[in-house]
Amino acid sequence: MTKIGVLALQGDFEAHGRAIERAGAEAVEIRTAADLRGVDGLVIPGGESTTMLKLLDAEGLFEPLRRFGDEKPIFGTCAGAILLASEVSNPVQRSLGLMDLAVERNAYGRQIDSRIANIDLKGMPTEAVFIRAPVIRRVGPEATVLARYLDAPVLVEQGRHLVATFHPELSSDNRIHELFVQKAGAKERNGTSN
View 1 (tube, rainbow, N blue to C red):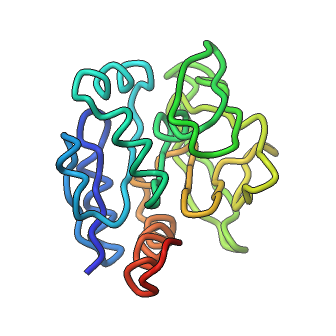
View 2: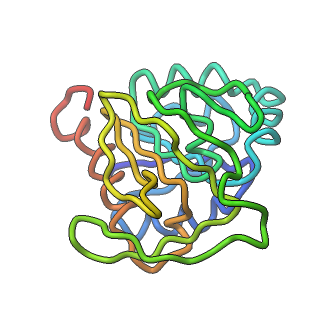
């Protein structure tokens, strides 16, 4: 069975774990670099990206996460999307740089501006929960936009990695987690990097 780690330092990692289980994989909470051994992919949940960076540094996880992403798939949601981007603004901050994306933090506004919207995912509507969400301002040539909201990319994949600027774990529609589980399970099935 495909094992998906869920970074369990901040954010609603438990909801991601439940979504991963519904998608047919085993969810494993990740709190240390040693926990990364044996998982086929990793979810970095939402939260507050600057706080998450401090927690990653405190736990010695920043570089292990970058190395993990060089070999295995990572799915970043909201703050996780910020951490996977190569360029972050509002304000500028460091990131793992695993996807060729420019992301602006909190670009939809403050907490009070959070919203639930319908987005088109492969021709079918799906619910997207935006909470102090970032906006993807630039998508590199190797990345593919899978869904948009207000003409901005909100779901993007690049190679093995996937980001959402919203919170799919808060929706009953499990297709996005299923997509990630398929990405992570492809290595297991093919015996090669995906």
